[in-house]
Length: 207
Ligand code: AP5
Ligand code: ZN
View 1 (cartoon, helix red, strand yellow):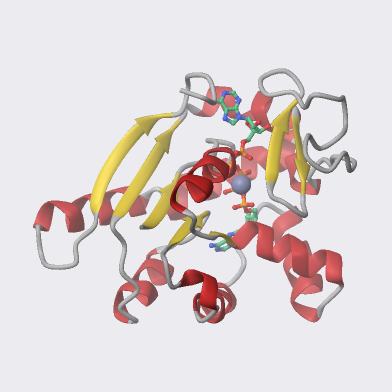
View 2 (tube, helix red, strand yellow; view 1 turned 30 degrees about the vertical axis):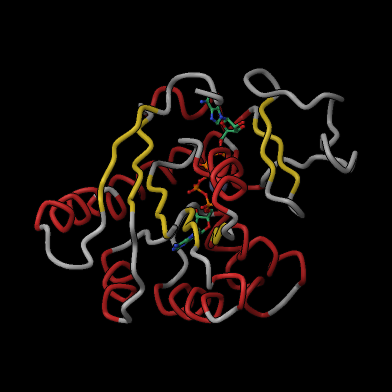
């Protein structure tokens, strides 16, 4: 199974990815998680990306496309993959299409902007596993601790109200165009075209 999860910051891509990757036994390829790992490791890429991410802007297409192409060469992608937060621009989507990276389903998670800031301010993450919690909507069993490892949860640096608003604007300006891009491709019925499904992300996580 080869999937793309599309949706605004805070729509619940990472949250749903955790269920989907287990059900289909495929890796979650989250470019956001990969960049945060580079920041933590203090690499040159991480240093450059941190400034851009803290400003709520997008990291350059060349860097992101290079990262994903390398990631797809790894053995665990043989059975499929789940893109989370990628592609985010037409250039990224075209790069995948041009390199013959096939997609079975594009899943759009739809959540209105009004709900996003509250979701982000209460988010807590376990970076090593990608597990995501919310202090109110999806609390961990023990406050501040990951359910599986018991390790401390962290808040993301880009989850301040000001940066979230910038990220939403960037989503509407640069990423939302992909909804039409993939819808049109799906409707074309051409060989290799993905199927497109829009799903409401407003209900409870399990739903
Ligand atoms: P990235 O890490 O991809 O962030 P994002 O797309 O902004 O999305 P989020 O991770 O914030 O949200 P999510 O949809 O995963 O929601 P989650 O499940 O966590 O990117 C970060 C930055 O990296 C970008 O700004 C950019 O700078 C850079 N970057 C990354 N990829 C890039 C690319 N391809 N090109 C260029 N730059 C790139 O849920 C959010 C909260 O809501 C959680 O607390 C969760 O518990 C809660 N929640 C989830 N579902 C529900 C529900 N149904 N009801 C109530 N609460 C819920
Ligand atoms: Zn995420």
